[in-house]
Amino acid sequence: MIAIPPPLRLRLDSAALVANWRWLAAQSGPAACGAAIKADGYGLGAREVLAVLAAAGCRDFFVAHWSEAAALMPLPTGVALSVLHGVGESDMVAARLLPARPVLNSIEQVARWRAAGEGRPCDVMVDTGMNRLGLRVEEALGGALDGLAIDTLMSHLASADEDHDQNARQLAAFRAVRDAVPARRYSLANSAGICLGGEYAFDLTRPGIALYGGTPRTEAVGHIRQVAVPESRILQVRSVPAGESVGYGAVWTAPRDSRIAVANLGYADGYLRCHAGSGGATWRGRRLPLVGRVSMDLTAFDVSEAEGLGEGDWIAIDYDLAQTSAHTGLSQYELLTGLGARFARHWH
Image (cartoon, rainbow, N blue to C red):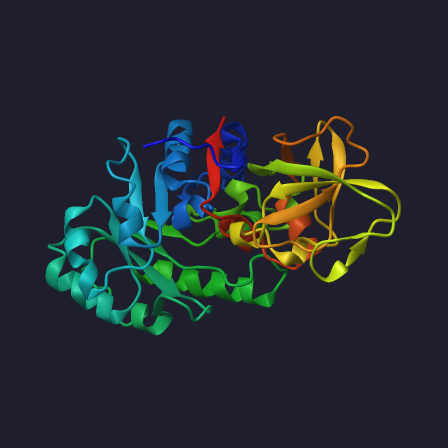
C-alpha cells in the first residue's frame, strides 16, 4: 500500500498536555486527578493521550463506550479504566472480559450487574441535578446500591463553568449521598469543578477539556496551555486584483491588489463556515487573515504580507480554544472533537 502524506495535520504538544494535567492535579489538592479520554481523547488520539498521561503519573481514565475501552487494550500497568455509559444488555460480554469498570447509571444497570457481574467492583453515577445519566438521589439513598462493591461513586456538575446556585445544590446533594453510600472513593469535579475549589474535589477529579487546552473558567486563564494546533498545506497562491472577489457568494472583495493562498482545509474537516470573519492563520510569525467563505475542502487566506509563502508550505491555523469559541459561537468541546479524520495526528 502506498503511503501518501495527508495535506492536513494536527501538531500536538505532549509537554503542554502533561503541564495541564499537573496544574489540574495541583488544584485538586489531596484528591487523585484522572483524565477523561472519551471521543478518542477529545479527538486527539486516546491511546496516545493515555500513554503520555500514564507516564506522567495519571492512574484513572474514563471513556464513554466499551468499544473505546477495547481499543485501548492492553492497558499500561497500574492504570484503571472506567466506562461512563455503564452496561446495556449487549455490553455484558465486553464488561466481563475487559479490565475496565462500568459506571452504573440506572436501576436497570445495577440489576444487570448484580445478576452477571460476579461481584466485581463497579463505579456508580448518581444524578444530583443534571437529569442526564445516573440514579436519582432517592434511589441511591433508598438502598438500591446496598451490597455493591463500589469503587468510585460519582456525580456530574451541570453548571460548573458558571457562578450558578446549582453548583452548591449539587455539592450538598452529593455530600448526602457520600455520607450514606459506602464506596472506596467519591468523585464530583470535572475541569470546571476543579476550579470551583477544594470542597468539590473529594477523592478523585475527572478533568476533560482543560487537559486538551480548553479554559473551563477564568481561574484557569494563564495556566492552561494550548495542546492542538491544526496545520494545512497550501495548494495555490494566486494574485487577486483590487475589486475582485474570493469564494462563494462574493462576500469578500479585495480592497487592493492582493495575494491569496488557498489551503487544503474546509468544513468537511471540521473547520466550519462560522470561522469566516474572525478566523486566520500564521506563517513564520506573519498573520494571515481568512477571506471569503469556508468551502467543503478549501479555505482562502490573505498572504499579501507573507512574502515567500508558496505552494506546498504549511500554515498554522488560529485555534486557541477559548478565543476561537468566543469568535465563532462554537463550544470549546465542539471545536476540538469536530476536527476530522483527514488530519494526521503528530505528537511531539
